[in-house]
Length: 383
Ligand code: MUC
Ligand code: MG
Image 1: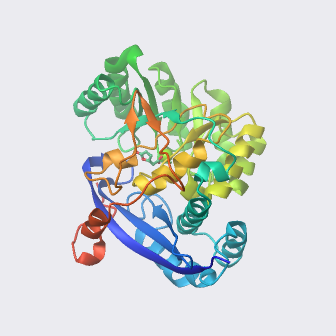
Image 2: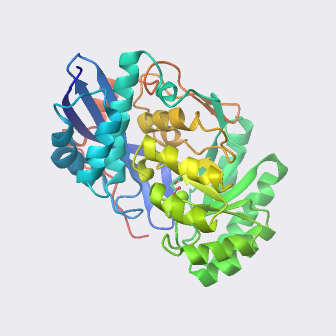
Image 3: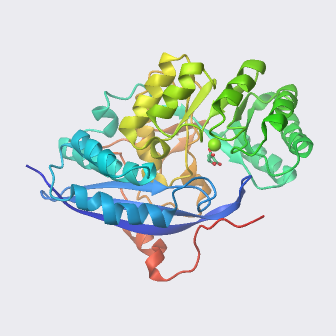
């Protein structure tokens, strides 16, 4: 039997290429928790737990993810059968409530280790990839319309992205819509414009704002209102032609069932961390499909490790109607993989090879470790 010998975590602070302005905070650095599972036969599996903007997006923080794994998840799993990933998921879910991103990081490393030992990809473990390239969105969030337009132009010219997600919700509704309209006008028929409110609108603002966004040609609005207001989300979905996507409302299969039962949204943003791991994310996707809800491959702006793991799972979905936004590594100044994930032709490409298909650049990992004493890390700043 191959046992789980040790589960190690490392906190990295990765500077971003520019400030990433969200309705809650501005990110200049992304903090990620890297997980390495060491197995008794010498094999190693890697995973990643990452959230956005300190604790401004959700209840988990980078430091909390590390602590949950070190103090609670690792002691449960060390010494167990490394091939029994389903058993590990059941045990951890029984004894560690909440903390979906921490649970996902460890689960990812277990799938990666198992797949590497078997000489197959993680997509192979989930039934095989049905696609190796996926349409890739880019988020325009510099905070300035002119700079966002220049960025969109550059992305189209380089054939890297033509789907743009705009982070709005910080300014008054009319100002935000004017910003979106300016970008939509500049991009025209060369691209598609979507927005993410990150729960920032009141129901009244959303009733008005969604209509205005619809009128300037926006195709999709993500999480316009608070995550728990599912009845109100359904009313907005029913009364607007623009597609409504659930993101923060979806924290695993139970939430997916609640949203699907009333068809409160048109699209699910599937995130492996937020869903509590690859297995549960696969279930979220299945529930969405059963309710005729479109699927989108979401991100928590992760580094290459979680990006690769997410690609492995998303590649197995029967349909990925709205493409994906797994561009996290491109937002970071430096890549921590030995071979970066390939982006091109408006697509992101599934990495080839066993496990999640990527390996770490150990020098980069060493350099960006928080415990080297650098001061830069991801906190929420009031803006
Ligand atoms: C989110 O809320 O979807 C995804 C892209 C981005 O810029 O932020 C994330 C988080
Ligand atoms: Mg979102």
